[in-house]
Length: 245
Ligand code: SAM
Image (cartoon, rainbow, N blue to C red; front, side):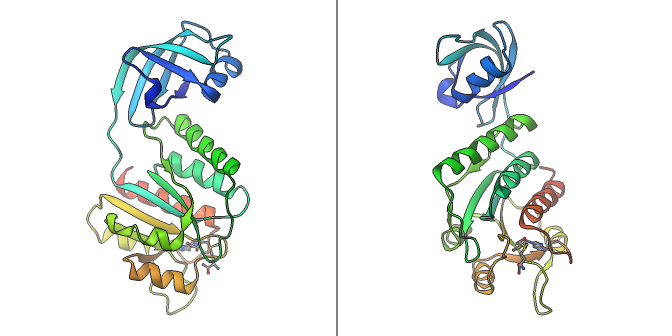
């Protein structure tokens, strides 16, 4: 059964209005016809089974009648990925895979070695990647893709997280970072996790120090230095394994 993302305002008691790229996908790509049963997610935990009533051949919307509805609770702990902006299209891979694995929120961050300033077009593309991955993996909650912000602004929001981690490779002998497994296993289950991953050039020493002063625990993923996209995916997968996201 095909899945479509429809924001809550377009879902009424009995009917769903499918517009924009989702309607294009339904009508022009998949060429679904009236009577076909589809799965609708609103990205806020609701999943509907609905019957297409009208594909809207000459209109900008398709209509479907709701047959059933299920509500899904948010996954806990809620994992927020603070990702140092990588070059080129690596962010798309990070968004796609971490959405599939179970991240709740993604915050692209500008740090000392991450100077990309995403254009509006790129940002909209990222949003489509998140929607597509959400549909593909059949999760009920759409991860929140935040506007990019500075590293300092990210640190300022850390109080609301019950566990804060910064991925910091063990490059120097004096590095205090413990393995992520040791840190996760030593604590009772948090309700929310902030996870900082550096860009290609890593975090600066000053940034790591500031993060530690803001309550972040420096952690490693082992002795190999991973690419930023690999590190983000591996760390989110480790949290998903540990807490069964
Ligand atoms: N030379 C860079 C440095 O000094 O950090 C390497 C950066 S690495 C390519 C990009 C980011 O991935 C790092 O900032 C870190 O957040 C994460 N990372 C990569 N490998 C890691 C590891 N083994 N342990 C912890 N974090 C790692």
